[in-house]
Image 1 (tube, helix red, strand yellow):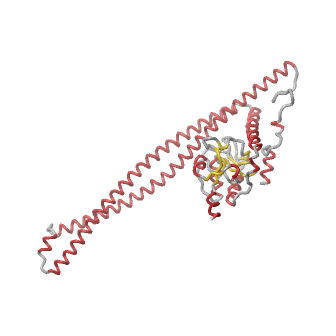
Image 2 (image 1 turned 45 degrees about the vertical axis):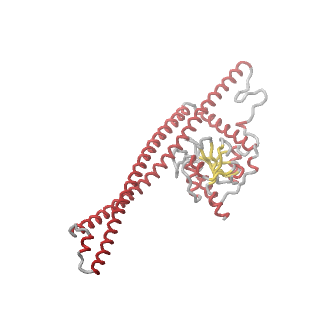
Image 3 (image 1 turned 180 degrees about the horizontal axis):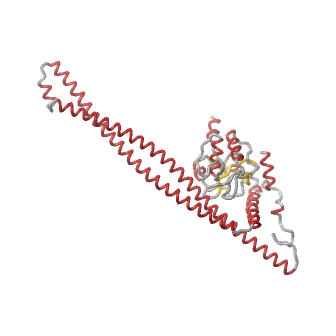
Length: 370
């Protein structure tokens, strides 16, 4: 964690005074304005303010596009996961259908053999054959054999009927799953197009900026994150949060922080690129726990804990639609894959709106308690 503290201090995420980039202007001076006098100073101030307002508008548009792309990415990942699950289920059903068809064929052969045996008996009713028996011992033997034959025939017919019903059920289930598979494939393709469209639009906006404006845009993003983090820290939240990770959480943190500097790519699960939930998925696999693929499913399925009870290794879910996730690493920071055009990095845990916290290894805690 000492390394984390150093990084966070350098980024200005552990509280205290803001860095020079975010310092308040001197009395009488407007942010971004150059010192000057008279009309030239006024024009310079107006120009700087207009430029800053333009960049802030661009930042908001880009942020909004990437947020929508991230939401669409969750839909893409969810549909992709469903496609894979349904494909596996369809394979299982196909095997069941094949086995049942073989069983049905065997039963039909058995029923055919019984019918042939009856035909070879001349079609004479069993009761008549019994009445024509020569002696009482033979009569009783024949009666026993007839009863067994009748029971066998009834058993074959009943089994044949059940097997046909199973086969029809498997076929209907397979058809239903195939239809859902196709629907999810279409949903996946639609989400993919939506993501590309929004990311392309955001990149186009950024490409119009000059190099200096791009640098200033990055500073605006950092400033916004810093101010939100500062507000979160000022609430005193760290006073109650433990910095003790579980042994599984330590492994997950070790994996996640080792990915720092790798590019964000939507839908990516490593090893060279990640999206936000792809990073947490692989990190917790390294920690020995399999978790859902998307941030929305991580929020829905994993055990929830209060912010004051969270510990390093827990996942913080962001935004009201649970469209982003980061891993808490202690000291008020997370490691996460932010968005296209950025790399896996450490930032303040309070730099985005928090929906809640989930704990992937909660089951291990319960096992330890028992």
